[in-house]
Length: 49
Image (tube, rainbow, N blue to C red; front, side):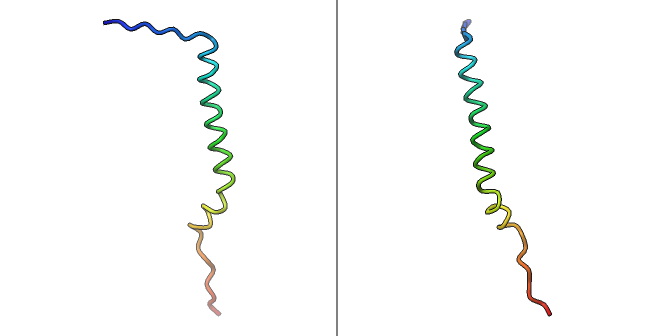
């Protein structure tokens, strides 16, 4: 059984925009939460003196 699919220029453009938008959204979210994420893994200075 053969399935034929047709993607016109509008469909391809929509797919590309969705992928680029998802990547951009992930980048903005990572930038917003970067300090909070890094703070969890960073060692706290100890008072030794």
